[in-house]
Image 1 (cartoon, helix red, strand yellow):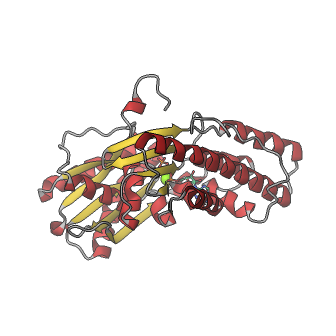
Image 2 (image 1 turned 120 degrees about the vertical axis):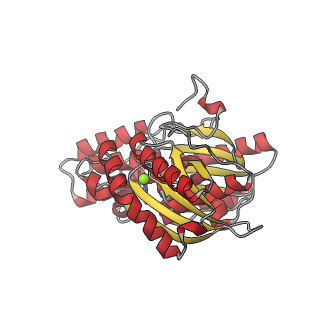
Image 3 (image 1 turned 180 degrees about the horizontal axis):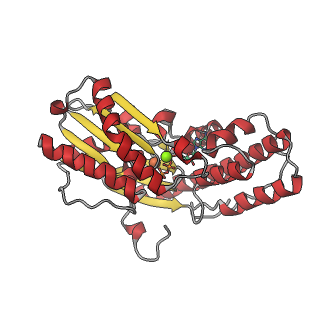
Length: 353
Ligand code: ATP
Ligand code: FE
Ligand code: MG
């Protein structure tokens, strides 16, 4: 089957065509077109929702056309149209959802509204055919969660951040050090030549029995250390980046270790894999730390290639195929969702965001 996937929940306008052969455990990406709007948002140091929504309107038609032509697939050959129906910046989500509905209606094909987080969660099946149940560490600009992925549509969140997301912490640290946006790759680049031992930074939550995360205190500690070291030389910036990245990695590895323990208690098994997803998963220091943890824990680490860790249409198309194979698709009355937790239980009143 051939599925078109559309992604417009944040600042990437993306579309892809994915083929899923009958009985196949993984997919084939026929095209994967991602247009980042980073330049439009760079001056503001973050994504401006209204600018993003307008940019999606301008770009989406061309991106979809390119995804189809790169794949060598005619519209009429598509079996279904999948789109990220949330969570995300609502203006952008509505652009993608409306476009996908119109296409599904015109082509008389199923319309599938995919949870953006579910798409991140299932990407390791697209690339590596990972079998359930596995443990997902989702670390992006908006989310930092440990999720037990039990089956398509069955997720249990076992840990989350109580304040900043990991990518957000990287972005904020970059901003306070005067580095470019988005900050994650910049911090990693500067950290490469820095001394991670130079600044002593806190590692909030480390050693706690619940696999939750907290990053606000670490970020504030970087701010204070930077203020003390002012004016900052290039060496200072490198050392601050290296010290921050090391602290962040220590936190993530410790929290994920506890997450694997919780997963085992909950399912009775060690995870078939530790899957990492989200933009931060492209950080090499983090990958090394988690690889070692996976080895020590008797599981394998699966990290989709960086271009599939950040937002893209292929993951949406794949998640669409997973749902369609279970007979799941959506009505044209589907309403875009600014919030859409993966784990309904975790979304109960009083639960942490
Ligand atoms: P979400 O998917 O939660 O809605 P998002 O779209 O911002 O959020 P992604 O596009 O998956 O998330 O990831 C972007 C984030 O990843 C940014 O915060 C960016 O700084 C961070 N990031 C990207 N590359 C790296 C890296 N090499 N090291 C650390 N962080 C990184
Ligand atoms: Fe994302
Ligand atoms: Mg993004």
